[in-house]
Length: 431
Image (cartoon, rainbow, N blue to C red):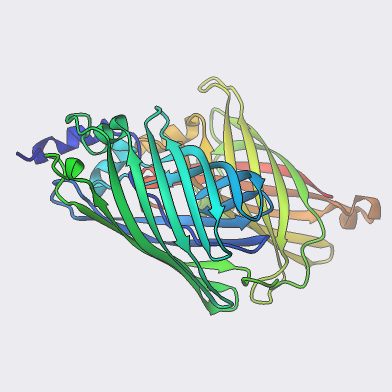
């Protein structure tokens, strides 16, 4: 017997995802990239909808220990030529019909640890143990071989996933069937191809087979789940720098802002309406230099993690927000030194701000803690403006702090249209 008529109710009890977006393999230090693309997957449950699509921003960075790999990231505590050990987090998708995804908020960020054995420069074997926010544990065992070329990189891989009973009963039995523990088996290929200078096509295709106990669940309608991803990204070229040198400075930026009820398009034409409750925030961002050009254009790129403190007001308590982004600056002289800046990234807020909750409630959306992040900025060099060389490492500027759901195009951000905006003034120090 199938439970199609119960699915809207069953799906609302779910809390995480069951698959994850592609990563792009790296081997070079200080590799970086930023991209956007379309993910598609079939729905294995017994529903009238067969396929679901997501648009996802992707961030890539490979440092000595810290890394970002598409929609995952981590930190390596130990590294040698033969093995590396670390902690990681990863977005996983829960693929159900699009119309339920805002209520369910199923796609989440799982945390865990991993160990990777570097059998050869091309061949890696890895083991991961991850958990959802409620302690439902699963593990992945993966073998991956990388074919590397100056203009392309391809990595076929195979993964065995072990699922605990709590995990399987929740995410395949939908808390109505006792499936028990089980396994799934995946195989796929992922990679990237250079289209023009720093512009690359990135993609992945994979298939996952469920074990017999999971497939025999009355709620599951397909033994196989396929997943594809195709997008565009800006990268530095593998094995060499595409810039003449790194930007000369890291930076620290401190900003203070107030919420606005105006949207981005309104603010860009200077039509600002300040939040009547005057909810405020203070942010601190660090900028790590990664490039000073793409396509030969004079653009400085930085990896920029940040923390935002939302302050207590009459309508909300205080809470924190965490941001990871890649930011580009364009510098020009007229008659002093000015810069335009733009950042793309991910924002996780520990609570939902009043302005965001109210704006989304007006549109009938349930808010999401994980959202897309944008930053628009404009600043002036203080040393040039005051004709004081000792202040040439200081910038004074305006920034727009923006969280949104990419126009309902991804379940990772709750299938939301809209979000929140804060006008802020900042001071930035290069060092």
